[in-house]
Image: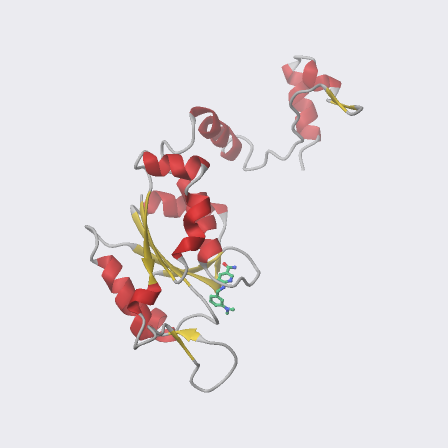
Length: 218
Ligand code: 4G0
């Protein structure tokens, strides 16, 4: 999958995308991420990207005449067209089935990271955005962290990104147990500072272990 990111702060993405599973996915070309600094599409001497709202009110908005040329630029960069997602505090709340659908249905995503109070409504109404997503019911300083959350959630559904162990676990998790695997987990040592692993889990009685897990599932 290819993901292009339109952001005022490309540096924010360094950590999360250059470690662990996402880094490995990029090295294996299962995931390619391309950054575009929205400042390069800003207007005037100061490359202005934001402006005050018509009608007054608090906060700033991202200008259509900066954001739309940036979106159009990305749309020229590869074959086909990207599915264009705007990360906004007012978007549709992200849920796991939506993550899986996005991973399945699209080979190319464009993520627009909102800032300030959001973007000029004409960017939405003019058809330059396919959907508006929020990761949860809280306000952040920008759409960058939500974009990283979305990338992480999607990447683990790209075939080959997770190791054998992890993906087998994921399969049994979603199908057989209906997305719930909310029983307590234990690993070595058998006793930690006076706290023991429940005896049944050490017993090797698989039927009993199943019963215990069912009884202790949230
Ligand atoms: C658009 C996403 C973007 C509108 C973005 C703020 C939280 C999320 C932004 C606003 C974001 C999320 C109306 C404040 C930038 N905060 N939950 N901040 N408003 O996904």
